[in-house]
Image (cartoon, rainbow over all chains, first blue to last red; front, side, top):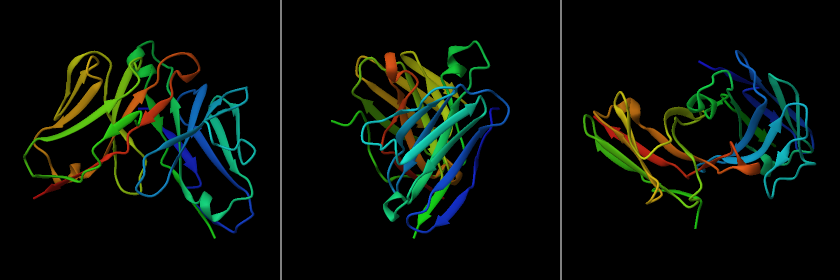
Length: 121
Length: 114
């Protein structure tokens, strides 16, 4: 099956610093990756859509200058949380769409990475 | 009205029973529907997808979709303690710039007790 990895799995940083999170599709190419954020006891909220070779598109209310996304290759997208503050502490999860197969059924599925837990002190 | 609504639970069922999870959605143009299982501290794991009205079965899991009623459900037969998790309903938004984007419900906490 499709495997998506994230690095790091957890990070603790001081307020005001920047943190970079990597999302990789290990055995397939992903022209589109998605970044989600999940606060405790809440559901996943889509932050942005990362498209290889073009600018990311952000959901309403998500600051694009604070959450920088780069999708430089078909297997890697990065999310940088700039000038992080305690309210940015959350579980950040990426997903990638698998376009390997012609089947619409598989093509529409998203495979999730294991998540990165960010704690800002 | 939330785009995707689920009862937050918790839903508690005895081992071996059928667990029934429900989800309604507001966007009538939605095309694809998914059920994810999420264990505490972990990322979601896809367990079922459904695209057409009716039932779709996979092992102990059955997804049911009724587009006219904008309703999707998940039945778990012979529930096991290992099924205890949060179950997230997700809906693939309609076309245009929203294509491929998933909207999640708030999740239903399921507890299967021995």
